[in-house]
Image (cartoon, rainbow, N blue to C red; front, side, top):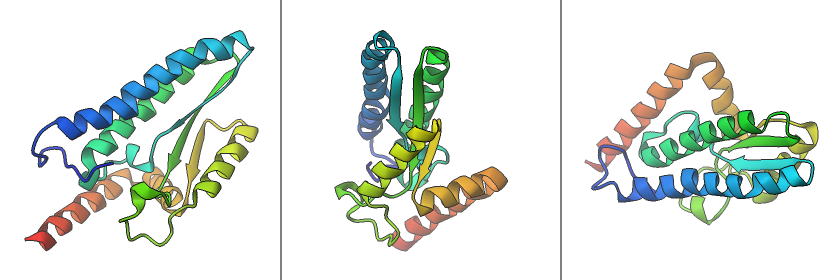
Length: 166
C-alpha cells in the first residue's frame, strides 16, 4: 500500500506493482490451490481484500483499485467453484496493526490476532464475506445506505490533505 494517487502519481510503476500483487498474485494462488482442494473433496480459499476495495480511498487510489480487482476476482472464483465443495471467502479488513500501518495515526487498528480469530469464526459459519475491525464495519454499514456519500467524503478528505500540503 503506497500513498499513490491515480492521476497524481508520477508514473504507473506503483499501480502496476500493486495490481501485480493484489490481483495477479491472488489469481495465481487460487489457480494453484483450487485443483488441490477439489482433489481432496473441497476446503476453503480465503482472499484478503480491504474495505478500501469497496470504496476508493483516493490517497491510496491504486491500492484501492487493486483491492477492488481482488474483490471482483474473489466473486468470479466463488462462482466458478460453487458446487465443488470449496468455500471462497473475501475478507474486508479495515486498518490492521501491522508494519504496513505503522505510520497511520488511527487508534482503532485491529490487532492481527483479532483479524485471524474473526476470519476463523467466519469460516466456521460458512460466511462468504467477512468484515474485520471497527473502521471496516463502519464503512460497510455506510456503503449499504449511502455509497455516494462515502465516496464524496473520501474525495473531500483527499482534497483536504492536498490543501494542507500547500
